[in-house]
Length: 258
Image: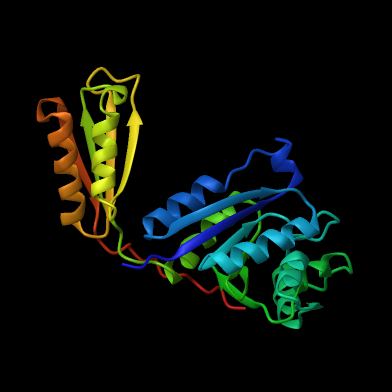
């Protein structure tokens, strides 16, 4: 099964300097995982227009879609919209549709400084949902950095690219990873269609190794799991849990009307 891939670009000097705690990455990763989307790469960038443009251009070419957070606003360090426009070689213009929507929300005309919020890429699509909007230019979605705003918008974006969830088997063993590396390597080599993860555990009295097996078909994950258990020793197996295999649940986005 072909899965959509995503790149995440988090923007802001305040994040890199720890002046503001980054609050969006976990939300984005969890949302994409729930929708069967593979996150291919994450970049955390300073407020440097040339760097934002370069990374957005690179990610847009390599992944099915890109989500950026931060750098959206009317002040001097809000560079994301201009940088994304530059990544696609399109002009940044005052968008009448965005301006009208903002003035309705504001209850009156905006100041010249506030109008900077309506300076958007000329060809960008304004996608409204849950009382706000995201800007989409080609396969790049631009979100603000405020975590509550990201949470309110990201499900609707992820639904555009959702696929059925892969099967995930998690097996726990009473054995140290150090002792069974060869067994794990052998199973990995024999089951190239299964993504196998190995994680030593040091703080649980019941098991010391966790293996995960991810595949589009349950039978593939089962075969790799059984092969690993046979090589490690069935007497070491504590338990196995399964997840996935279903379509992600859909929550319809709401359009507040513009």
